[in-house]
Length: 123
Image 1 (tube, rainbow, N blue to C red):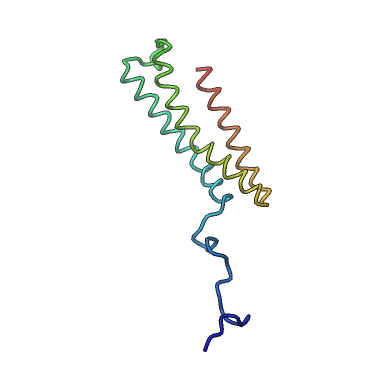
Image 2 (tube, rainbow, N blue to C red; image 1 turned 120 degrees about the vertical axis):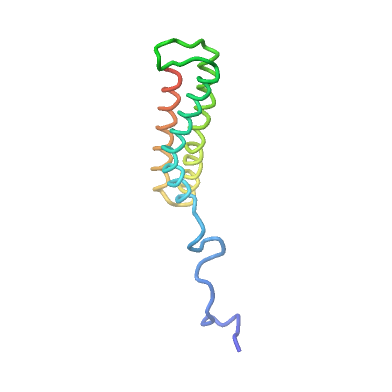
């Protein structure tokens, strides 16, 4: 018979929610950083699609009006900022939980986010 209060009774060595299939904030932060290039290409495709829908082609040398730039740039920027915001959030959460290495994906994502904003604004 198994005695649950006996310390030699086999039990789960990991707390609930921390098994091999679960993801910690640090893991989620790095996954978010890894998804930034994917979201960059999706944002680029969305911006080009919106430009095409508005009838302007900035790659042809024509300068589109401000409203067309805003209509294409803002959604693209939001798409790009999604994984950046997730990486910063999860990285800082991991850092608060004691994993100081959580600051690395947070800083990388913050720098990419600033670069993305500058890219859209200076376009």
